[in-house]
Length: 131
Image (cartoon, rainbow, N blue to C red; front, side, top):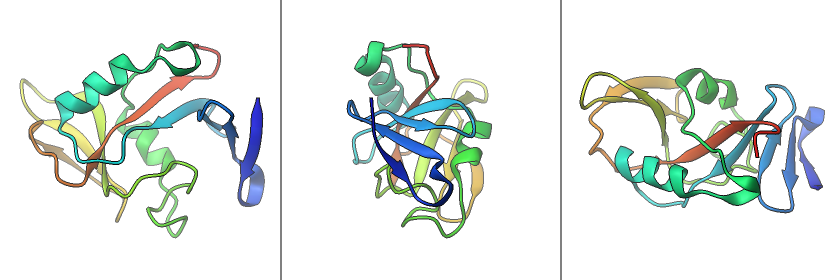
């Protein structure tokens, strides 16, 4: 059940279970714990998430880029995805170590070692109706 809408255009719905629905992309999001975590910790959190019936995954870089809105909230994204972290891990890897990270401070992306953790957060995503 939807309990609130976010900002002009009402793009985001926040459900009573904490799931954020993006009406523009058709994706559902959950922001992870607001603490530093490396890629493996982020992946473990996403895999263990069972809110709304589960079936969550780590986002692609393209999905993270779609959340970026310069000047929106304190992290250039909707404030209903609450995080103080600057970076969010993507599920996309390069070889055995680096993974894509997306920087919500400036909209950039970088390959980073998976043991990097400072200012990194986990977000979970799924298509609506996957739960």
